[in-house]
Length: 156
Image 1: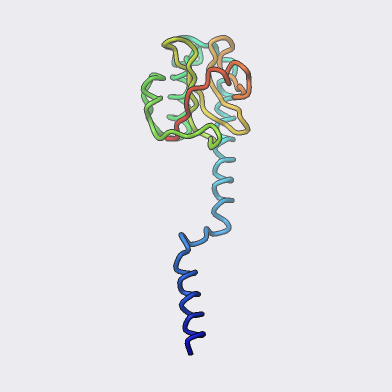
Image 2: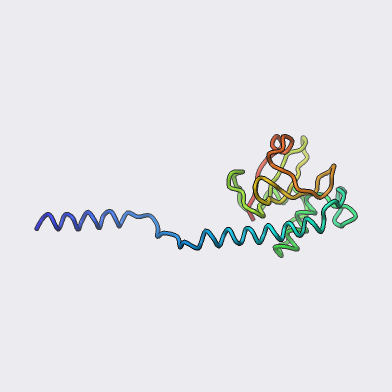
């Protein structure tokens, strides 16, 4: 009598200690599909703006700066109104490690003593931004320049 009771008690203890129910199998797949769709939208936005020159304070296809480009991308793709400056954008959302970046996260760089730069993460270490030297383009976080200047990432 004691042995079956102890077995039952042991089973109850083991099953009661599970921390959370398992995730549905399709949940991870849904996140991947959303990320892929978002990346396609960002790539379409890039093609629309590709080659537009950098212009400090600019917000049009005549010239655009990095924070305005991010502002316009978030407005047009996400329907979100972001602050206009890199400094204000850098305080939004929550901090994300470089390892855990997802499509649409903001990536920030310290490019000078008081100068900041921002772009939108795509995938596979690539981000979309308005470069001061080449205008709207895609760059790699693995590029030696951007790797050295990387500051933080934010998820909105």
